[in-house]
Length: 243
Image (cartoon, rainbow, N blue to C red; front, side):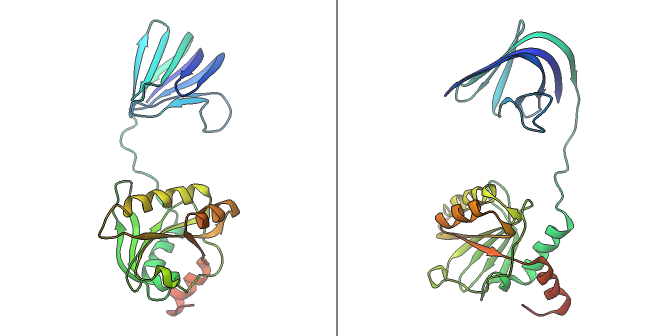
């Protein structure tokens, strides 16, 4: 990673134009080629950025970052205060907390919590954008995705619509489910439905809490929302019975 602190102005040229007036900012150039411009506020969110694949060309006092669509981020450097590079190595990735990791195990063991007739086929079912954590079947099939950022809300549903009987279902599980969870599940569904051996695939969003906007968007896209209770699931494990 390269860290540059510089007084600079920034112009974005693409589907629209944007300008950042001259100020002292942090420029990050990552190993994946991405470039982002940060102020000393806004937490992690950059003022502007270019995602990979993109290419950085350094000129005399100017950086030009171009992506494959021909959009450009032009950084005019007035004064460089710091310039250093650091090898971070391979990141081991985010480890799910104990609750979510345990939740995945519980649901794999007690998939009937999601609906009558569901049974486990495989955990970590692969897709081109990441694994679906559980693959299960009802009278035909269902796919279950356990994701990290979310919660599971309320009591589990144990009914299945007749219209969904015999179909695969992709289920994304979060502790607190927002619109991002719906979008993530939608992308999984788009990919899974390209596989003629699985299609048609429907979806379930399960969380301890589901934002009203997320529920509205999910239902508009035909995704069923399920509220789960982690403590109740732990009770299933302790007592060896289904709720």
